[in-house]
Length: 333
Length: 243
Ligand SMILES: [Zn+2]
Image 1 (cartoon, each protein chain N blue to C red):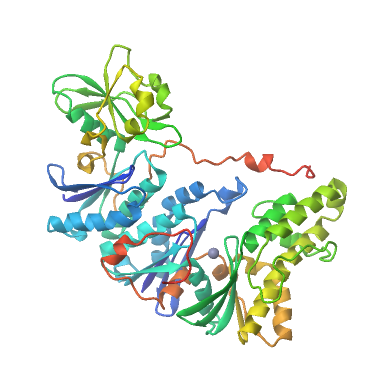
Image 2: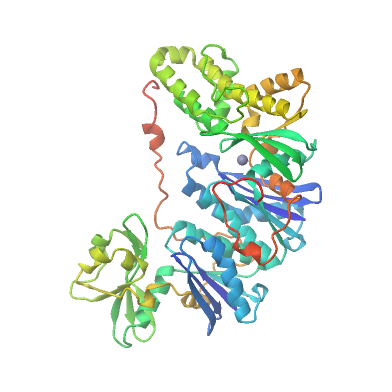
C-alpha cells in the first residue's frame, strides 16, 4: 500500500493506493489565500503546507480506512516546484518512511502528471504523447513505456496556464483568471484579433508565451477603455485561441513525428474548453486517440504521484535519508 | 522518557538525545541551507551512536525558532511527521531561550545578569529577546520576541548602566553595528555559546506538551514576521485601461 504526498505548488495533497486501486485522494487547495495576492506567494504556500500536511495525510488514511502501519511505501514529489513548498512534503515523507521503516520513492511532478493517465476510470497504456499544461509547466513528453520518457518540448518562458492567468489579469478578470477567461471567451470571436503564436516554426516543439502576453498588453493600451469593454469577450477569445493553437499544433506535430496514435492530456489547463474542443477536432482528423483524465486527476493531486510510484524503484535505506528537493529537474536519473 | 530534540532555526543543525534528567548524546553540525539533506542522516547517526533506534523515542522536542523560515520548516515538518507516525507526544522550545540558557551558563553563578541572544533574521535584522539570569539556573524573560534592526536595540535593552551579555549568530552577522553599543558585552566570535545547542530543548520535557497523539497537530514555527507579500500589489498593478 502506497501513501503519496504532493506539496510542489499551492495544493497540499495526500493519496493512498492499494495495488491498482486508488483508495483515497485528498487535495487541500490554497487558491483562496493566494487570490488575495493575485498569484501564488511561495512563503504563504509553504506556511500553509506545513499547517495542512499532517491533517491531510490523516484525512487520506481515514478515507481509505487504513492505518499508517499498513503502508509499505511512501512516495513524495521532490522536483520540480517551489523549493520551500517541496521541502515540507519531502521532510514529512522521509520522516514517516524512517519511523515506519518502509520504502521511500522520490517522484518527479511531471512524471506524476503523466501517470495520472494510468488511473481509472479509463487507464491508458503507453506509448502515447502527453501534453502537460498547467499554471506551472508546459511540456510535451513521449511516453514510450511506464519507465521510459523523452521530453520533446517545453516552455521557454511562461507556462500555458500562467499565460492565460496573466492575460486574464490584463483584462481585469479575477484570480485565477484562466477559468474566467475560458467562460468569457465562449461567447467571443476568436478571430477578432490575430495574436502571434510563439515559436511557430515547423519542427519546433518548444513553447513561448511571452510574445502573446506582450502583444495583448500593447493591443489593450492602443484600444482604450471603451472598445475593450465592448469587445472583452472577443479579445479574450482571440488571446486564448493563440495559446491553444500553440498547444494543439505542437502536440499533434509531436505525435505525427513519433508515429504515435495516442495523445494524453494532463495538468490544470486540460480543463480549458477551447483546448479540449480543438484537440478533439485535430485528433479526430488525424485518427489519433485522445484521452483526457477527469478534472480532479488533471489538476495537482497525490493520486498521480502514487500512480507514478508504482513504476519506480525505492531508494534504499539509509540513502534516502539524505534526499533533497529540487526547484527544477525532470525524470528519474 | 527518551526523546529526540531537533533545532533547525539557524545554520547549525542541532540534535540531542536524552530525557528530563540526562543528555545521552548531542550533535551540532554546520548545515548551511542543507537541513533537509542532513537532518535525518545526523539523527540516525546520533541514535546509533547511543545504540538506539528512532522507534525507541517516546517524545520529540522541536525548536520553534525564530530563525530561517525554510530551516525551521524542515525541522518542524520532520518532528510533526515523526510524532504522527510513532504516535508519541511533541514538545516545543524557543530557540532564543535555548540560546539564552547557553549564554547564561557562561556567566558566573549567583551574579544577576542580562542576557540577549540574537538570531540572524536576514534583511538587516535580528530576532531577539531580553532575558535575565537570576540565581543558579533561573532565567526570566524580560521582553517579547522581536525582529529588529541591530541599531534599534535600545528598544529592548534595560537601563543604560546595565551590562548585557549578547551572543548568537545574529551578534556575529551584525558585529560592526553591535560593537558600537557600549552596553553590550558580546561573546567572542569563536565562542561556542554563539551556536544553538539542542540539549537545552530537553528541558521542555518538564513543561507542557504541545501535541498528544489523537489531537489536532497544530505545532508551527515562531515566524515573528509576516510573509513578504503585498496584498495591495494586485490593486497597484491594475492596468490604466481598467476602471
Ligand atoms: Zn502540476
